[in-house]
Image (cartoon, rainbow, N blue to C red; front, side, top):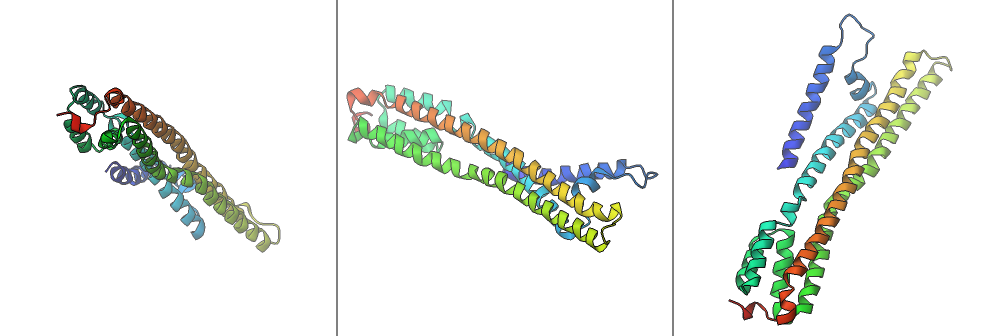
Length: 248
């Protein structure tokens, strides 16, 4: 839902910015170049397509980073209320109720607790192994969507470089057509495309790679904390070796 709203807001902000730049341009200065013309426009069709693709990719990247940060908050993955409630129920030996509470909460911590307590009849060691296996599987599942940011961060500079090479080819074609003596404005289109596509490739890559590193580290930290919390909750089973059947 957050991604949907962000994708709707990003183009609107982009249109507002470009409109403001166009309105703010002094009509008496015909040679003055607006920010829209400099950063969002190319005289070449392929160059314009590359710029447009990178601009859209930039908006998507920002929206996706926001979504991932929202989805991987501590209170989403490791609800404090769930931890307290399950801890009280286990302390009261109400194992069945503890399992039901954990199963209703589909958070990362809830999944670890419910998976472990289902193995309580097989002993504490089996509960520990189950927690570790489920934690590894869930951590891998959460990290997979984050890898898209890494892919975008590595591909976008290559897309910018593609525009750079193409723009320089266009500029050299103009140089050849003018027999080595082109007018400056004849080279401006190709060089402009080369520089602008490079700029947008970097604009996309920098937040993508930064977001990838920050979110990945956050997930690693939270999943490790969740594993520790789950192991602490099942500690009473280490001495008693009683499963859910032994409680109420």
